[in-house]
Image (cartoon, rainbow, N blue to C red):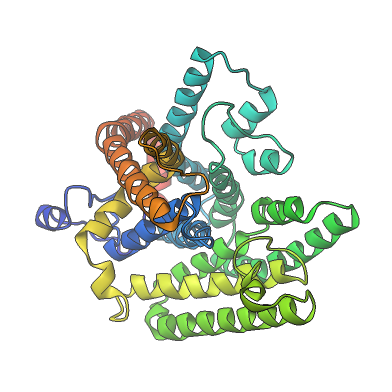
Length: 416
């Protein structure tokens, strides 16, 4: 959830923003950032329906938004440098938001697999439950057999970031946290470079090595970090000054990166024609240090986009203010979790009508994308309306009752 101010939203504002434009703990969310979530989720579906090879960029947009959101959330609640109590409150909020849908989806998958008599490995199940699925995927596991879970590794990456960064936010002075975020912008590309060299020396296949860098733990914390720095810039009242320059710089850096690796593909790899565009933004993102630079320049460009959304800049506001986009963004988490199931269901349906989906034509994949997106959004809305909101209210109510039962602890938290 994007957190833009600590003022309460009135009932009229709530109605004007639509039925799902709710407030969380008194902090208002940004409809423009919700619209970005919509585009991020749809780009991932476009990737999995084979119409947008660079659709994985949507995941990195989620990363930047998450870094921004969690930083602003903690700082506006006064939990920065608040110690273990603040960290506990932070983890509780993240758990309330993420775990019900996530574990519900896993339980449904295990139930379906059990009914079909499909066996599972303890390692893969454990990796999903304990959020090291990205590591398990790199090692060839991390899936529920008979149920689509190949996209859930991204949530493991997010939870790993929350554990590390949430503790830093709640245990360290703000100046130290800011320096840590800047350090991550430098350390993560270095870690990607070292990791790629090590994998090459050990003889990993380029596809496997590329995926290991793509999903490796901690290797993309720089994308979260730049989102966190955006939040601090907003708290300092400076974000509007550099929103456009940051976006332009990001696009320029991305353009330079693409031009450089088009040249590398042509002069070093000997590619010609359209072949020079391969493995630059999509494909095997490893080799000639492209895995070092791509994710960094992409993070800058996406951070600039988020900054434009946060400041309601005229460059993006007319599009991002569209209510349907904001509404989809509201239910995008559930839609993302369910989207692989939707893609498979639509593919089976289309095959039943005689369409070739696996290696079908562009129009077939466009239809698959449209139907899969509609189904994923529908499932996300059903989940949000009838599962997420009731469970969230129940879990938060239980915590509030627990705090009320221990007024001394509540007073300590309030004092902080």
